[in-house]
Length: 237
Image 1 (cartoon, rainbow, N blue to C red):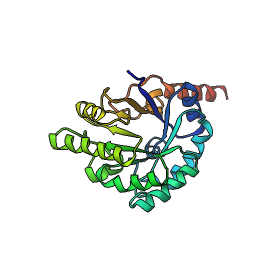
Image 2 (cartoon, rainbow, N blue to C red):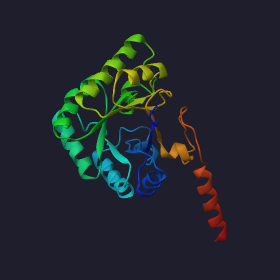
Image 3 (spheres, rainbow, N blue to C red):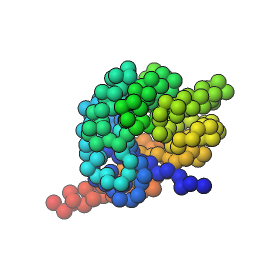
Image 4 (tube, rainbow, N blue to C red):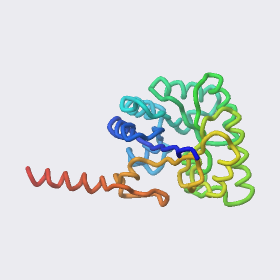
């Protein structure tokens, strides 16, 4: 069995550098920065300018890992818009880009493949569509939905995706997708049958105590370290 892929989401230079030095294989500059960094309710306020800025920061800290940047909402509505947006992220230092969606994104992936821009796909629960769907919901519960996910993964692979993130997918369905396609699957809230896992750094180190996803394991307690340190600083002065 091959070693599972380790992936983590980071948003700035020190975080990215620490993750890179620790040996993580893939670092994602996620549009989840809208929530984790900016304090918004979801990712839908994130712009391409935001993603370019954070990609530039992360790039300075990464020398070994593959650096992937999210295409934010409304920046890949057509193949040509997708290419323009992806080109900006690549110029900012990304090694590849990621976009959400299945069947409707095939022509966009093909356009990026023509331009030799590597693409990571993302299916299952799509955070950019949270307002349309009325919340974050598990995907693949019905047979029809499971079949749709499996088929879309195969088409995304055929269109040129080098990997697929499976978010909040029923574990059995995530396993079926992993068996069906040859490119790696990277899970988040999709069970242990994927080829790798991705988590947000702040969840892993306990730096965002106000909300921890049910699938995330917290390995540190950075929030308490920060608060205790600041309290001691206040006491000293």
